[in-house]
Length: 235
Length: 240
Image 1: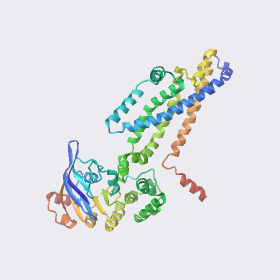
Image 2: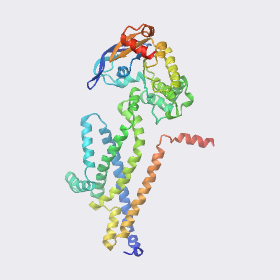
Image 3: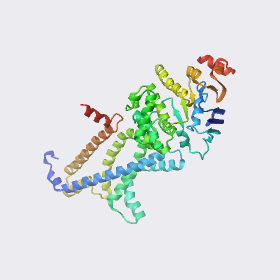
């Protein structure tokens, strides 16, 4: 293999596949992630519940989806679950998003549960002693504090999901990896198409890492926009 | 005002409270003393149902607290509580700590809430700290904010759970002074404490608990100078 003999032009010829793939990857990841946060929050809250009929289904769900490979989940959802329930397929995008939501929710649930449980019990007690309902105390006192602690692990989860989204190529979703496969298949050359795909994922994860760092700073207890404004006025 | 009727509390097989009967009258300051593990904190926490009651009943202004039909959240707005560990909300400024509950539950407007908070902060001597975060305050200051936070709901009773036990010695006085002022103003108070000086000076009645029972109770003069029970004598001998 001669490294100097790279033919980047073949990738360039297929640039529209890559750009389209980039969008598909971004849409899959963002939809999967947001859905996974919402479902994960419900499951995570459920796992902190003292009521058994709430706790056990949530635990079962998490164990099931963490204990099986995402690749298998994607295939079951696309080929078996959706056709069986709806009698037809809605395409790879719907199947892919559902699979990513269901899978990431299980991981998010654990992060959210651990975050909630890491908040000192006295916080809930103080809120309840003032007359807040459990729900109000959770929303106003516990979750805002727990959320700050959840940001780094939830960020990791975002990056993991971004990379895992490449598994949807197995149901012929045209994401970044799919573009690479097309080029590889057409030219029987493997370095160029897959390197480009790898670099695109790398750039995406880098952007996400920066985004997480910003969110982490923005939501740190010490960040106080009011103070900043006052300082600016003073100087 | 508060009536405790044959209160029992067990954790699994451990019986912490073995039948407490007591009554706190309006404008009365009651100090609860006793060795650690005697159940005095549990007793206090049962009053606003932070601990589930195993058996017996507690009435506040005639309403049975542990009746399943009672709206406990409503009762709790009338019963302020101050904790050993302060439990201020670290993600909120001092003033937000105080205005949160009145704005959320009493639907108080922001302006009114802030005026009330500043008034209360002035009372506990911390008006200039209104826009600081709790972690920027000393322990004594935090505890005074916690008192102001509880007062913001205009409670009819205040419960204090060892409010000075987590404080450095030089900060104990500033918190006790605020509590004394409250007592003078006629607040009904139940105080679990190790501060015998405070109990002697401020309490109308002192309750000595040991082993899950109220062993002895009376006015400070009786209890501290003429204790009747051997266990009371032994305990006071150690702490005075």
